[in-house]
Image (tube, rainbow, N blue to C red; front, side, top):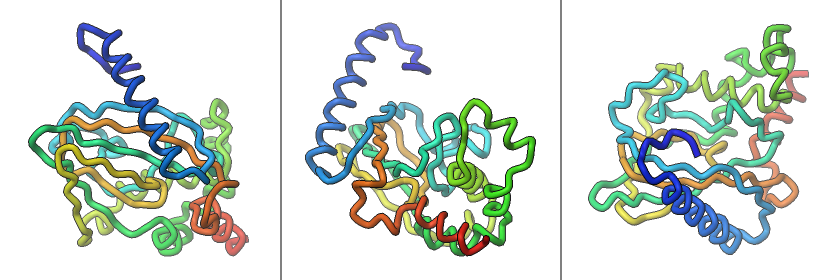
Length: 215
């Protein structure tokens, strides 16, 4: 556990452990065909609206998820959220799904080519992570989407998750942003490719098709 400045760290760890275990158990019951590897759980205690963060760290800009510290190696990122704010909703904005975004932007942006043929500097920067081409592309795409002003300013739907509600999605496919909200819990699990019900829709499969076309 990191980033906690409260007094009773032991109690906070117990709360987070209990939430994580319950969330993983629920996901296993809801989605029994999916082989899941539990990842981190997080507490979102800061109001999202108006946070002063670097562009790549901002949650209020549309993006698809990719973790800079831990490559997925083709596994899906499934995330389960709970809004336990007693009075206010958690407001999301969503854009087109990854297959449509990748088809539109991957080649023209140059990100596909750079992922398939990384520079020496890229390779040296990845020595500690051993990032394959797919994860290299996803991380660059995450950054590129957040920096693309035309994409960010386009009209996209918003969704309000009321107090006490829970929702889940593959955040490597759903382009999303958190516009406002405070006090939420989140559990991430990694879903292995062999259990997917529609493997052709997975971002790794989409990337493989685009890479084959480029070659």
